[in-house]
Image (cartoon, rainbow, N blue to C red; front, side, top):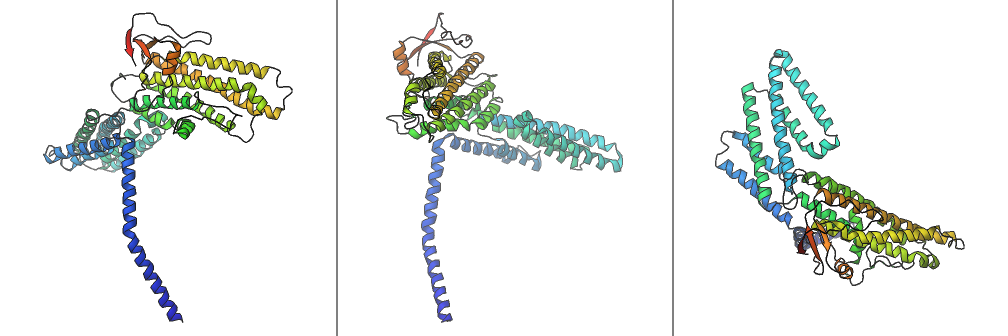
Length: 487
């Protein structure tokens, strides 16, 4: 019986093995198809990734060609540092590549000079004192350099340079070469690193450049537009939560509903892009010295507004809702605040995108503030005395959050006015009727292309922007000679 059982187990094992082997090619093919599909999707999401890969290959090929042409024959094996520099320095954007290249070059130069000085100083310390002094200097510079990496500003802009400084200084001082060999090592290292970094920067700027500043500009505009989409005219408050953020005739309802969530997680991307943009030379619409830090201010205010929308979303989808009596009282004012705030945010996003004065958003902000005053008056009135407090709290909470959204929308507008003034945005003057102008203002800002507004004509002129309008003031007007531009 035991023998028969063992034979059955072996037969079952071999049967399973054959089945697994037969299914292996099918699984392998399915995995390969899935991998190819993911790679294709990755390239289609941002074709610049494919171009970047080709650019890295081009830079490596260029440096390797110089090596094979024996242009590095005076450097010997140290020529490999040029290839390593290309691999380590080349980044996706011009700013990131330029920043890393300068960090590596300056750190190598500084560490080489200090390393030679340390060797020269140790040479006069005697046979016993020389290694002790060198080890002490290595310990001292590594300790200080590592601690400095924790300083926020240094970590943001010079962290890579600090690493290269520690590496180069340690290599030169601990090498144990004679002084003339140290000079040769420092010279060859600096020369090969400079050649590799120059190859990276040239390829990054000349071949389909990717500018971090332009990406930051588009990201801020897109984030504000997402907030506007979350508060736009199609919002419906039916019992505060039954229908929320419904967009009729749109296939991407959930994207518009959750669009603001991506704004909450954009801080790291914005800070990285602003840091890289600071290294970039003037390009296109962005001259050297463009106020990139103000984009971070706008982004911070946008995230604060997104947090309010998140809280609003939670209240509107809570289990406890306002009674129909309370909803009827405050529904009109809440709807107007949401609609006008959404319109103003979309106008602000468009103004950033095309780099013009955001005066078209002023009327919507005033309308939202007017609705906020009305709801405040309602909340202070005595109409709530005969209503159960538990039925009032959900509606009052929603109204309070919307008032806060209006306040933050006004703050975003003021920060964009400041950005427009510092960056010398062009001023605009509407030339169509308000009704026709509003019909052209409902278009969304896209991340990769300009918004088409065929019904809007504006006059554009170069000028210094006025300060943001006060609460009771109207939008600024222009009367000087201007040049008509059709957008």
